[in-house]
Image (tube, rainbow, N blue to C red; front, top):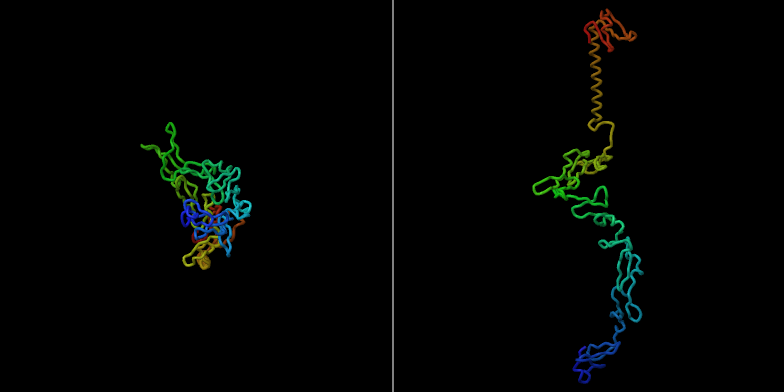
Length: 328
């Protein structure tokens, strides 16, 4: 603190001493008063990191990561020992540092985007691995996708209808799966194959995608084994008048056959039988003889008046009906 006047004149007016050029100084444990030349007891003199006034007294304070020790000194806090929940993720370990702590990875684990990953798993990935839903899976670089036959491998993938072909020596060019090569003036390109235009295994709808296709099912069905559609039981639909779900259970009759229709059909059939019976009765009244023949003589039923002169040579395996009016 600057002295009232020069230190060369009466010690600068300082109570305990003056330092060049015009600064008053105080002994240990005291601080310069606001009058700039006297000294008072320093309440924070014993504190290594300062103090604050609480309830009429001065209390030493410590920064984060430290706690107050003896004689106003601040000592490091061992967070790893005091809180066992720190760094409790898979493959993590807590390491204490001065005024802080750090989560490190255990042996055989590597840090990936702030998370410890099992190195033995990621080493299996052809490109690199990433976290998805709490699990680590292999991922591929741009222009590649996971091989459907091996989740650790990557295969070339085209995300457009046309992509340049990958060519090596001797003009040998290769295209990703689901593409066919096309020779052009400026080189070889790979063109997407529309699998839906050729024979597919989809039960219902086929949707072409880049490098493949997807099978889809109509409403009320679910896709199984990626190709077949299976009816969802019970069938649930939404009607316009009743937007709530309605279940339809199978019945013995088709949906288009009603109870009234069945009754009507039955009555109509009975009327047809009665009409046929009436016609036959009327026919028999005009005929004088009726005889049935069969290959088996014991099957002969009855004979009325004059027997027909027709012989058995005209008989066949089927029943024949004769009368004296005409043959039916």
